[in-house]
Image (cartoon, rainbow, N blue to C red):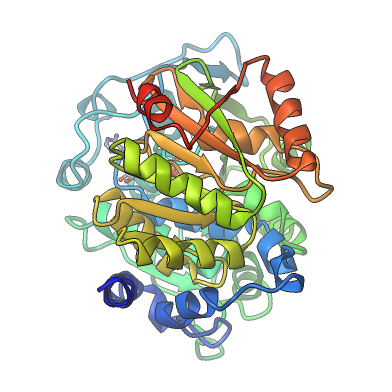
Length: 488
Ligand SMILES: Nc1ncnc2c1ncn2[C@@H]1O[C@H](COP(=O)(O)OP(=O)(O)OP(=O)(O)O)[C@@H](O)[C@H]1O
């Protein structure tokens, strides 16, 4: 029965969320709340929608960079390969620029090479080809590196830290600061994996909730944590002697500067470090504020940038459907599903209430639906996306905010149940492109269907057409023959 399948889907989502949540995140210290029950969030979302509730809430609008970054890490299981060239700006343009095509060329310690191969890495990623020789050079060189999430930055600096520590010295030699506890844990996991065959090197987390006895000195060679606690451990509690630090890594600089106080704390840590300490800074984006911050943290840097692969609408067939209300939009959707075979689709709604309602309606029509909703914890969202990626559900209904920045490459059909708009109600062209666009490399053909239910949304659609200079054709969903044609 339809309701049963909905309930079953919720149960399965919950179970999947729990299994992911149990990885590391559940035993977080008191500063973070408990993992929320996915069933609660989904059932809350299928309550009938009222006019007042249909407005996006502050929560819906919250663009939590740290959560987004964590989500991407949790769902990603391989490298994002780009065909773009790495841009390098050397501190000393006359010094030779090395780039490696294999890990052997780096002359790593055998235990580390073993760790790298055990992780399934066959060869360095694009950014690692240049960043690794620079980071492993003698004397050490400072580096600012920017490339999109998933291109191998974390693996690169983890390898650099592990290479530089002396396991015989039982005191901290590398500090790595991350914007949040959860992100620090993810990096810690990479250190543990890569250092699997190098057990003499130990790691400790400088995070709130990890209370140490006053007066003690850390013996672990690598400390990873958030800026506030790291600063306290270096200055107030003196668990770490900053003068003995050889490598300082600042990860996710763009996320870091979005958090009040993190910039100052990071700069204060950096000032305590010796002049010859290697400073490394990583960021997925490079707007002016990040750049200014980077220059304060990293003196005399080498700079590596890897451009993001551009998305285009060239291989996408775009249509719009005229409707009067959300029920008509739902009917149009059913007609489309009745006429063509859709392997997997993502459906975007403006509010979580609409998303919840639509997921409920679709499930009543016996569709296997996954719902990504704003009140779910990041780990639960990652679990839902993973199940969808594995094909366990065929339809993913989500709000815009939830799915920002998420790549589900195999989805060839995207339905904008509501058109993407920004806070002021203007067309959000960037989100439109990201939702339906494809990179040249993944140049698979796709289909995008936009639901238009008012003069206002028609106006938005027109402005999107103008912006991209691409015609969006009208589709009559009462005409089965016409719908069939769009699939050919
Ligand atoms: N040389 C490599 N070969 C194969 N896989 C790799 C390689 N380097 C990294 N990976 C894998 O690719 C994925 C992304 O790598 P990594 O986390 O280092 O990227 P990142 O740029 O730091 O992304 P993020 O900012 O999201 O953490 C991970 O699953 C990682 O294990």
